[in-house]
Amino acid sequence: MELSLSDNALKTFSRSITCLARVGNELVIQASPSQLALHTLNSSRSAYQSITFKPNFFDAYRISGTQVQCSVLLKAVCSVFRTPIASIDHLTVKLADPDASKVQWALACYSGMKKSYWITCNVEPDIQHLSLDRGRFPSNLVVRPRDLNRLLANFQSSLQEITIIATETTSLPSDAASEIGGKAVELRSYIDPTKENDSTLHTQLWIDPLEEFVQYTHIGDPVDVTFSMKELKAFLTFCEGCEVDIHLFLDKAGEPILLAPKFGLDDGSGSNFDATLVLATMLISQLHEGNPSEPAPAATTVHNQAMHRTGSEAQEERVRPNVPEHPSDHTRIWSDLSGSAAKSSNEVEESSHWC
Image (cartoon, rainbow, N blue to C red):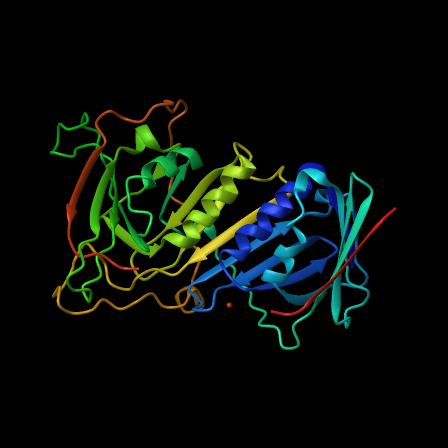
């Protein structure tokens, strides 16, 4: 396997590695004639991310055989990108043969300096693969990264889990049906019932999808999902850097959620890369909370939640063609002091020389 890339493709590749490193510790590289796939799974198996690149994403892309795969530590790969991207002319990644013990990462800088890193492959790689049909999710929303950033700014930076509650939009004018009429989506900081004497700020944010989202689809009874903020923020940063919207698919409590870039009208058919983030959710719904003194079961692994799923037809999407630049003046925020959730290398051989 040998590939090289430069310019904007190199910037996107660097963002991909940074995002993957914020999710897991091990990077699985799978190369085939049709694509290069990068995967990672976090240590608790509650988050799985995959980023794929088509051959035309690279300046050069050569694969010997049908498929090549290996696994390396993300911490080691991140050391390659400590060199400022603006000073790199191109990057070359090479695996001499399928059984090679090291992957070579070579940087050619504009200054004439060349740097080479030999990263050792893991002896017993933990190679996992997860595939979910996006059409099986009954609810979904599309939001611009800058808008989601602004909404999440209302919550404490130390917040570890967040709950999204989706309800059906009403045809009545805003605030006509109820106190929060028209605000069909709620973001809520998750309260851990096992925590005592915790005075973390608890925040609830009601959102009008027509004002804040590019697209929103939900039909039927209210549903909620509670999941980790850490991976959400990592994916948000990745999409913001790539200048694409975030497409979030959800079902109900206990079922995994899926996040992917929204590339526009063609939804990625013309893009030369794609990404998927799958997160496990809390088993207990926050809409029907039981005895607050009983601890809520934590999220299961994404592989357990995604096992034996069947596809389903996607619901008709409601798209607002013109989304205002400024948020709704009537977005409601409620905050109070209450209990809330409080809150892993191989050696890298490096050489550099001047041409």
